[in-house]
Amino acid sequence: MEAVAVSLREPVDEFSPEQWGKIDAIIAEHRTKPGALIPVLEQVQGISGYLPEVIQRRVSRGLGIPLAQVYGVVTFYSFFTMKPKGRHQIRVCLGTACHVRGGHQVERRLEEELGIQPGEVDKDRLFSLDIVRCVGCCGLAPVMVVDEDTHQQVKTAKLDQILAKYRDQEEVHHG
Image 1 (cartoon, one colour):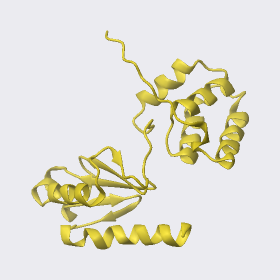
Image 2 (cartoon, one colour):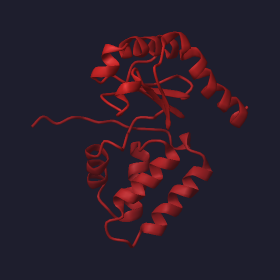
Image 3 (cartoon, rainbow, N blue to C red):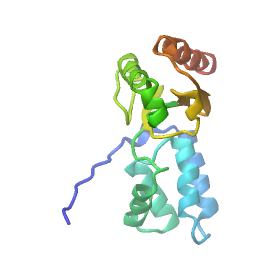
C-alpha cells in the first residue's frame, strides 16, 4: 500500500468567530455521547460547508477521538467533503436519458460560464459543479439540480437565466 501525503492546511480565520462558536457548541453537546462522530461531522459541515483539517483536528480534540479516526470517517462517507463547495451546488445529470438529450452540452456550457470543471468551486465560492449519474427524472431530461431545485428539459440558452436567479438571491441576502 502506497502512503499518500495529504496536506489540508487551512487558515483558522477562514471561519468566523460565530461559526467557531457554533462548531464548539456542537462538539460540547455531543462530547459524552458514544457514537457521536458522524452526527457531529454532519452538523459541523452544515455550518462550515466542508471539513478541512483544522476542523477535523478541533472535532478530534473535542470528542477525544484520534484524528486518524475522524479523517477515516470523513474520507469514507461520500456526503462529507474536505474541499469547499459553493453556496449553490449545481449537479448536472449525465445518466442515459440526460446524456442522450444534451446533458453534456449543459455541462460544457456551465464549465465555460463558471470557469470551473466538475468537482470544483468558482472563485467567488458562489457555485460548485458536480456530475451525477441519475436523479430519477429521466422523462424530464436533461436535468440539472441546483441546491434542492430541479430544472428540467434544460437548454444551454436558458442557463444564464437559471444562474441569474441564484446570483440575484445572493445580492438580496448579502448585498
